[in-house]
Length: 352
Image (cartoon, rainbow, N blue to C red; front, side):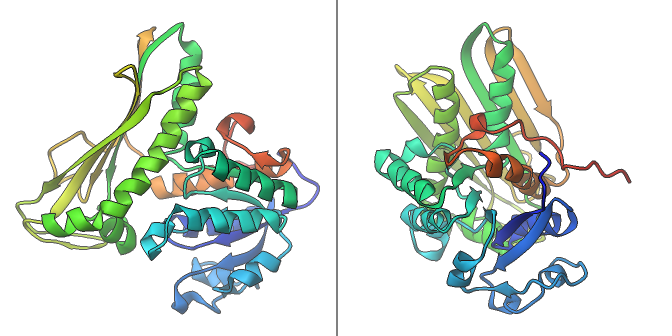
């Protein structure tokens, strides 16, 4: 969406996804980098360009939240780990996002909020009040939950005359994922079964809330009222030792997990999201190979398969960055994927 000037955007957090996002903000002419918030003390004071292997851009990374709030910016790309990782809860993310919105900045977040009504009318009213105060908008996004589990299945249902069941599956290979915080601390790989059960407890609640949003969003748009969203998960232990980017996976420790989130109507599944995560897909034969599948059961039957996505983190970041212009042009308030223009590639295609 063309604008008369570059959009000033803040990058909030520079982890595995945030670094891809930051590179886009620096290299794409339709954006001007307004600021960068970091959590790692070693990143404080670094130039944002240097942080991602680019020439200096004159924007210094900071860990001062109040400094970010005070900036003049059109949008914040809010991409931290969930608050539960730092000992907080979902309310902490709500407070941060509300403060950003009230300060006059649109917010795109990857911490959920794909469909805020899932959190109840109290949370929705707080978010809407912050949007009114700042004349701003909020959009939650990601690749899954996000593009794969809401935009893609909704697009396919445009061909349906009857829908019996929507099934979405992600199978991801974490072999090259660089973040130990994600691979070990959140997903629990390399942990013993006992340690995994304890460590994954707060992540289970986070996962359930995230995927319930996508399931409720799709069902609600199709006019279906769900009775509940069920969650189940299981894990696999490895019998051999192997190395991945995030560390050593020892024999007898967790090397894979499978999660399912099912929206039920009168006890029958209407939409199911299955997520398979593998520390190294070449070492784990159980469960499907990496890729994405969307299956619409009904009339007609449809199955769409993405057999490989070479840079999933880059895709997650791009989906958020490509939403900035649409959100900045949208009326104030909470904006789901259904309220924004179709998210397509970067403003200017770049050929090799």
